[in-house]
Amino acid sequence: MARPGKSGVTRLANEIARCRICVEQPRGEPLPHEPNPIVRISATARLCIAGQAAGNLANAASKPFDDPSGVRLRDWMGVTPEQFYDAGRLAIVPMGFCFPGYDARGSDLPPRRECAPHWRARVFAAMPQIELILVIGQYAQAWHLGSRREKNLTQTVRNWLQILGAPEQPKVLPLPHPSWRNNVWLKKNPWFGEDLLPVLRAEVGRLMG
Image 1 (cartoon, one colour):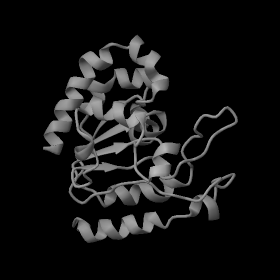
Image 2 (cartoon, helix red, strand yellow):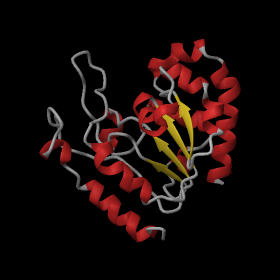
Image 3 (cartoon, one colour):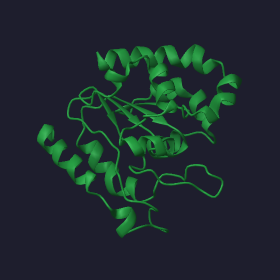
Image 4 (cartoon, one colour):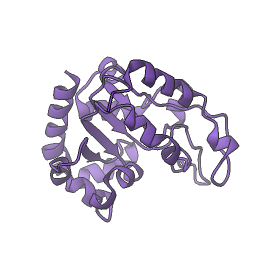
């Protein structure tokens, strides 16, 4: 199969930027604000981050991971902001492209259910050069791991070495969300920093050059 190339990726990105399905064809309640898809696809990047959905700060800046979670994620990866936002080397494709809004407790709602079925197959078909996907959080792990996902996030991430070594392409590496809400999780699971992060940084260095 021929690669879509840069022009095909650009056309797809422009189409995504105009997307309004969460308002015009919602599954359930429509998006409570104007759609603002935040996604970065690339014809050359070999590494992709598959996260949940943009937060409020990222939505305000129209920039993925432009918040404290992004600072922690870049530390985990061992990259500078300049490297992280170089779309030629890193694609960022969340499960939901727009900030979903808040629930009654003030927490971010789950990713919109319209996005993944409508866009995900097309986006990754347009990026056949991707070699590794970093899957962040339970929604991305459910989509990208399928039956390889364990019964909870901790067990899924703990099984990272087997998941990374599986023969499927592209490779997948599961991660917890870098939110401050996971500070307790990180303290309870020191193996994440001791064992997984060195491998993550080595893979990021290899794929991003």
